[in-house]
Length: 254
Image 1 (cartoon, rainbow, N blue to C red):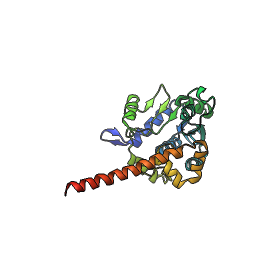
Image 2: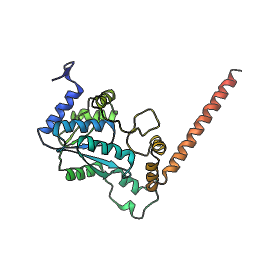
Image 3: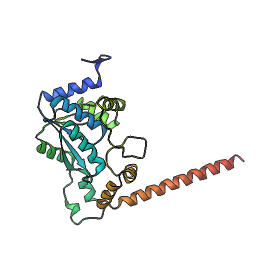
Image 4: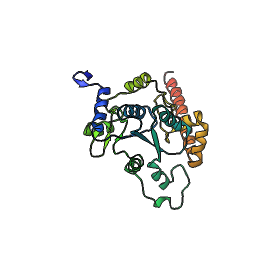
């Protein structure tokens, strides 16, 4: 057993958590977001449970986007697992409030879905009871509170968080060591964003790098173009303001 300062290393802690799940069931389901963390979790689960007993599920905002499917297809081919696809639970809220799209008659009368609803459907489709996620303590303050409260092993919710104690450098090192292809970067910023969403930097990256995917998004959510137009106008005003502030500062020195 690998020990670091009297504690298990992150990788050994991952193995321990998955062995604890394996003691309860012989199958596991992985929440595959398409990002680097969930890929590591999926690989670790396959190594512990085997490909036939490991399933994954993916939630989409727009079905069939190449920027998402290329990672899913890669995981299916390399690891030999089945990935089940479901509409994202947030779509019920998006349709209800007509976000980025025209209002549909009757859309506001539908039941608002939650993460639990998708998990229930994924469990039923895969026949798996326990779900593994790639959440880490380093993600956010909210994740710290949630993960520390359960210790990475949520018996009541039947969820496990094998990467709880990993940092970003460990994730990248693992993927390099295992020779995994990195998922496409869906952000124009320096941060490594991989999931499809409605953040301006993500939409701009998709429009630039995956124009066919952007066209598909526009078919379902035609108002995202106005969101980007407002964002670009704000950026222009920020640059103008910076120029004016610099000019005013230069006058003060005269």
